[in-house]
Amino acid sequence: MNRRRFLQVAAIGTAAAAVGTVGYTLAIEPHWLEITARDLPITGLPASLVGARLVQLSDLHIGPQVSDVYLRESFARIRALAPDIVVVTGDFISYFEERGAAQFEHLRSMLAEFPTGRLATLGILGNHDYGTNWRDVVVASKVVAEAERAGIRILRNETHAVNGLDVIGVDDLWARQSDSTRALNARSNDAALGLVHNPDAADKLAWPDYRGWMLAGHTHGGQCKAPFLPPPLLPVENKRYVSGAVTVDDARTLYISRGVGHLIQARFNVRPEITVFTLRHRTDT
Ligand SMILES: [Fe+2]
Image (cartoon, rainbow, N blue to C red; front, side, top):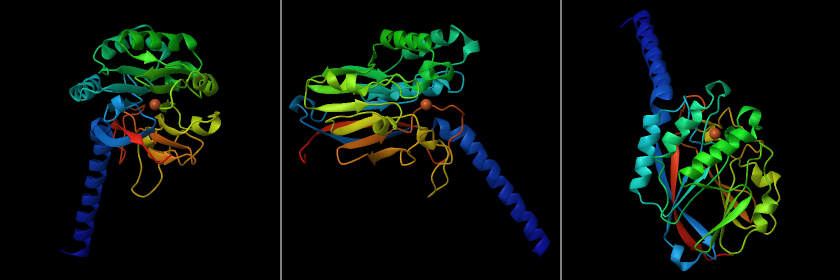
């Protein structure tokens, strides 16, 4: 092969790889759900909850951008796991003003197949659940109504006890609805688990005397990232908050879900995620 022919073949190969990568990013990875599994150690966890299965779903973004078929299949996979507790860490919907009431009917039909937990199904709102500019409380109230119709109890700066485990649900930071102090004041048990949509809430809100894990979403893991590099688009101030387990300080650890859905259908090296936690008794504190 002469040099010119070699360069032609190399160019064709590079173009094919680029087309393949774009196709993968747009068509395959956004719906290639990974069900991740890990332990969740909780201080003071009641014996009856040791070994219980808690599933976190985040950032469903129900709406025109996320495939209904993909979401329903994801729900079915979780239902088959027979979870004890299910939590949703916000962004049930992607809201579009021009779609009007139909999007809440769509939300209702999707959530009718939502997998509920044997003991409890809890959730919090994300910024997208507050509609335009994250400020529309009427949109939020409709999301809450549809979630609760589907058996998901939405915690708005509240604590809900599940067999001796306090699940502390803080409302959304960007919607300016967060009141962690109020949520924490309602605690009645030693064992606790925090829910925040935006991981920046770990730094920006008061968490007096709170020790333990906080489950979050919001980042979608950055959606696209080159290997060994940080994702270029990350909607948080604290750029350490990308995905997975992140130490906040000596008292608190975040788990940031990569989320189920997306805003733009593109993921690269950041597969969508549903996390299955096994509750454990934490003994080192
Ligand atoms: Fe989101």
